[in-house]
Amino acid sequence: MIHVQQLSKRFGRHQAVDGISFDVSEGEIVGFLGPNGAGKTTTLRMLTGYLPPTSGNASINGFDVFKQSVKARRSIGYMPEDVPLYREMTVKEYLTFRAKLKGVKGRAVRSQVNQTISECGLSDRRRKPIATLSKGYRQRVGLADALVHRPELLILDEPTNGLDPNQIIAIRKLIQELAKKHTILLSTHILSEVEMICSKVVIIDQGKIKACDTPSNLVQGMRHAGRIQFEVKADPIQVRKKLSALTEIKKVLHGGKQAGWEQFEIIVDSGTETRERLSNLAAQERWPVKTLYRHEGRLEDVFVELTRRD
Amino acid sequence: MREFIILYRKELKGYFTSPFGWVVLAFASVMSGLSLSTAMKGFTDNAIADTLVYAAFHTPHFWFSFLFLFPLITMKLFSEEERLGTIETLFTAPVTTGQVVLSKYAAAVTFYILLWVPSLFQFLAFDWITSIPAPYDQGSLIGSYSIIFLMGLYFTAIGCLASSLTSSQIIAGIVTIGILLLHYFLGYVTFIWGNDFAAAGVFYQISSQLHLDEFSRGVISSPPFVYYLSMTAFVLFITHHHVDHRRWKK
Image 1 (cartoon, rainbow over the protein chains, first blue to last red):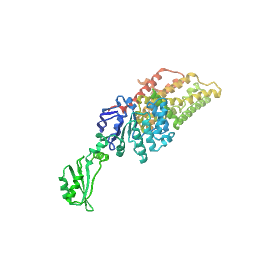
Image 2 (cartoon, rainbow over the protein chains, first blue to last red):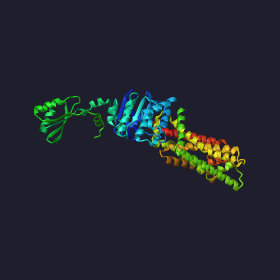
Image 3 (cartoon, chains in turn orange, cyan):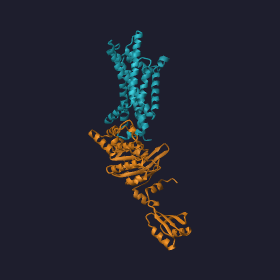
Image 4 (cartoon, one colour):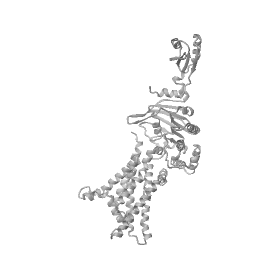
């Protein structure tokens, strides 16, 4: 569905997007992650034909986004970041205008607009001017605009940006609903959102792709996935010596003493099980143990690890 | 073509769904009414050899109100889209830059033509109300409105261009009126400096005052047609390129 190859965008001296390549196949929901200013919006704008790439190319549905822009745009429903709308129009007027502009014809206009209005939970606001709607409702109008011509591909730029928790849940549910019928490329910096919705994640930072995989693979492949918390009553120097002697252990960090308990953080190779050996060791040395806990890796850890600047 | 019509209708509707368009329409009809009554006052005070139409288009405030119409009707066209960010939703829909520029321009021209309907009605009403045969002929009426139309084509295009240059409506309006005033005063160059210099002919050709003077006497000639139509095409071409420039590979 989307094919991106060595896509770059330079604004003067600033390299916003630096040679990224990725593919999105039909039916996938891809989360496009990155810290602020990573180049997410710029990439999406290039995909939707709003900005030309400096170099490289991208195609949607087989149409080049630069050379066959209008054809490529026909199969996209795009919701820009801050959801620009014509404020003086009513919801229904706006969606009707957009549906027609995006090629919906004849009787289909009315039925598709009505269907989209009810799908997006806008039924009770259909006659209201957009200027009078709250942020959450405007966000829904933006989503409805992206949907109204039944595109094969939805590109959503931070769809839950600036909403309250209830609205976020509502929009997420809506996106999950849509995922059954559409391919979705979604940019965000909210990780729980990606974990919940997406089947694939592309992490981008400073214009470069840092990772591109399923959320679970990313978490498994992460260094910090093997982080064990270990609290004992013993001489810390002894503990460190004994622990370091074990195999498959990368690093032993001493976190100090708290109420008589020595705190350790042990980083082990990913995909290994060390807890049994640790408890055996403690029993052998007669160390009283308070905590022996392996942290579950989360996408958040992956994200922080890949995009941290220090 | 289909996209053009959809965009055109949306733009044109935009003039009437806000009070703004109605205020401009009211302003235009009051000013043309004022011109007509000033002309009629002139007729009662002195013997005048010109027609009523000629006199109405030569009142002191005619150019003042006329030139100010263009920033009013064009300043919103592109700058509003740029400011609201809707230019992004507009250009990510399957439309070409040409369709967008032409639809906006055509809507502005249509609205401009509508602004002159009250004035035409006022001339016709003279006859109906006073039951005196109207002191003007077909020629001056047709001539006046054709030059008004021609100037409108060109000046609206200038407004379009100015609006595409900035996201501020105010700046777009100021640029438009600035260019129009400059163009207007260039038409006076030959009045001030005489016509014994090489480029005098150029200033004659571009003088809107002289065009209006001839046409409102009923003297319809082709050079102004060529001048205004070609300048319109040229300015729209630049506007198209400027709007499209965001799509250029740098």
